Every structure is written in C-alpha cells, then in structure tokens.
Length: 125
Image (tube, rainbow, N blue to C red; front, side):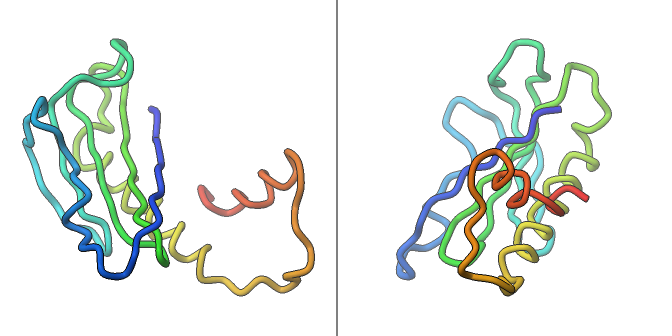
C-alpha cells in the first residue's frame, strides 16, 4: 500500500469544508468520520495503474494545518475496505498525538537523515 500525506497551512477563518476530498472525475462510494478525520472512499484514477481504482482519502486538522491523507492499495487488496479507513484514522490520531507532545529540548534541532528518522519515530509504531 501507499499512504500519502499533504499539509496546508490554514488561516483560522478558512472553513475545513473548502478543502475538497474528491474531484469531479471521481465517484464517492462511501463517507465516514473517524475521530477528527473526515474520510471518503472514491473510485477514480489512482497515481499508478498497479493500484486499485477505489481508494480512501481523509482530511483533518493538526494544529493550524489541514492534513490530507490517502491510501492506495494494489488491485485486489483487502486494505481497500474498512481497514484502509481505519489505517488512515490511526495515522491521523498518531500524528495529532505526536504534534501535541512537548519538546523536551527545543534548542536541539535534528538534522540530516537522522533528523528525519527522529521526526518520524513513533508515527507508525
């Protein structure tokens, strides 16, 4: 499976509804809300022909950012059902939890590949 994440900085007056989860070229087949994540399952063109044409997208707020998530699975994968939505919801919960943890040493800034590994540590545990 492939999970993508996108963030957009949002002014507080911008309604979350302005960030579309599907396009006119896609057909929404399922809608859900899990925790703070709004999810839609759509049929459309995946980013690669080896992926199923039915996939999940979700969006929610993390601080002053809109976090957009999507999960694309190989054709015939079981994760396209409710498991795909559950995985995106879990990713959202963990992202929110990690973003709210106080930084014990704000003066230390991770750098390089090690910094990326430190920043992502715990996100998918």
